[in-house]
Amino acid sequence: MNTLFKNLSNELINKNVRPSHQRMMVLDYLVKNQCHPTVEQIFNDLKSKLPTLSKSTVYNILNLFLEAGLIKTVVGEDQEARYDIITESHGHFKCITCETIYNFNVNIDDFTSDDLKEFHIASKDVYFKGTCPRCLSNKNKLKGEYL
Amino acid sequence: MNTLFKNLSNELINKNVRPSHQRMMVLDYLVKNQCHPTVEQIFNDLKSKLPTLSKSTVYNILNLFLEAGLIKTVVGEDQEARYDIITESHGHFKCITCETIYNFNVNIDDFTSDDLKEFHIASKDVYFKGTCPRCLSNKNKLKGEYL
DNA sequence: GTTCCTGCAAAAGCTTTGCAGAAGA
DNA sequence: TCTTCTGCAAAGCTTTTGCAGGAAC
Image (cartoon, rainbow over all chains, first blue to last red; front, side, top):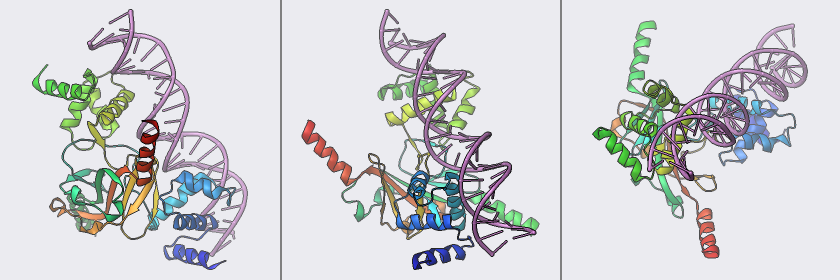
């Protein structure tokens, strides 16, 4: 086992994920291809090295990595689209408990980056995730009742 | 026809969308329910008023509104998930021509809003869309060649 | 009368689930 | 040996497409 794979292996072990060959290959791929690959891309690119690889294994592994906090999905991981009538610019906050999406005021136009000097920007979105006050207070109630 | 519906009707006509009954009902719903509804919610809530309504009609109408620029989808409208190995915080720019997602440096931690004082924020994302330099330059080339 | 729209059904694409066999501890 | 993982197949969801009947102009 070479040094790279030893490092990847340790990274998995640190997160309590058993370092199987397939898992290390997917992690290695993600480290080397930080271009936001889709499941399809990961599967196709690894098939030559792992001919028996199954797409559901790729899904399994990615979901495992997500739970372990090793990776993130690019914003808007939902399969179900949500629509917004066009009003003033506002940010979105999605509660990970009740799945409600809240609007909040934020001056999105101020956000910029030197990296984008040569890009034509058509729209800007900010998307926060977390827990809303209602769900926070429900959690505290439960703690009081049962703990 | 009451005033509200006259206004909605004009809004559609302004965007070159013929104001059918179904379209006005969907637009009316979106104006009254600015809570980022899904297709399912729109369909279910309108079924009582429009018993013959079909879900594919809702999809048709929403896609039409999107093209007309009357509505937007909440960030991350893709059905295909994309994954990111966790590194420092960065923004995402998606080119609407070549669909490439670029990273850019941005100090996301600075972004905040008084509206979120009582929310627990777990993650922050910024998501820009537009055209990347490569596609911009291709467009200019085409203009030179064909126009 | 001609064009456009609706709504049903079927299909397509992404993701999850169930399960048997294989691999690893 | 016992648990965990892989990979196939099937199913589940969201969304799109084809088409016939109907509505609007």
